Length: 386
Ligand SMILES: Nc1ncnc2c1ncn2[C@@H]1O[C@H](COP(=O)(O)OP(=O)(O)OP(=O)(O)O)[C@@H](O)[C@H]1O
Image (cartoon, rainbow, N blue to C red):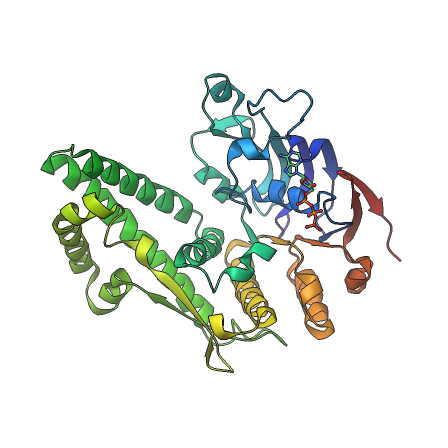
């Protein structure tokens, strides 16, 4: 048994630029350096698929299949990522990929296997693996619409509360079913009411879990991370306002009534006028008392890292191990002090952070404490460190 969550072996086949790759690892952080387009982010994306959700690019399943222009007939091919995970509960063999059986029937479905057993959804992955990432695309997290911020927050919750991904999936399923019924003008009152009932149950559970994480992250000391800024957090939304003011049972009644009364409007505009899909995560740079969207790109990245590291500390305490951290091109944007502090904290927490960059020199602070690989043309070479 170990107090770490780590990938001890990972195999890719026909995934993105990798025809086949097999990598054996220990539990230490992993550093991938190499030129642009070498395959660093693709490998991080493969690791992200060991946790629930659509992976760090949220790409379509067919897009992740290695495209081979010469023999490509336009149809997606099956790909697979499989890994041996070391966790505080023991080792697991986890596999995920584009389901070849569904593919043969013209459907795209993500297959998930744990210890040789096919799983019905992806939620079971959350019980064995948690992963949190920071990518260059997330530079716009505070500038764009709220859906990416909700996804970021939900991913932090998954790590502490593995059932959260099932709740989110169940809520979204009900939301889609209701929208389809309303759009088609089908569904009697009883049918719609039963779907709305499921939305109320799962939707409130989602909102409560998010609020609980925020309360934990906001507790004194959790967010104070050396040279990193403290992020002040809040959730905005009808559901959150109601939960603050009313007992849970009354919130249920209110949400049920709002959904019923909003059917005509939702039939026209789609979605639902109330629910956790309408909430937003608000973030401020505490010391500057400035909203995150007004902060510099570097400050925004540092705020996100503050939240990720605070969450990692919480998760290490609560579940015996922090999540896999996938930090794509992050280190190059940190000054020397923050970089050194981040490396020390990653090592002290015993998390397997996967970090990428083009400049090997930026990772010198991890010499002797991480596993270094040079990535070139979708091939990895292990480097020995001083
Ligand atoms: N489905 C696919 N099949 C084959 N190759 C792909 C596929 N998807 C992406 N690629 C290619 O894989 C290569 C590696 O991409 P990746 O994003 O991993 O690079 P990287 O090493 O992270 O580079 P950078 O430092 O520029 O971020 C790119 O040339 C990209 O075009």
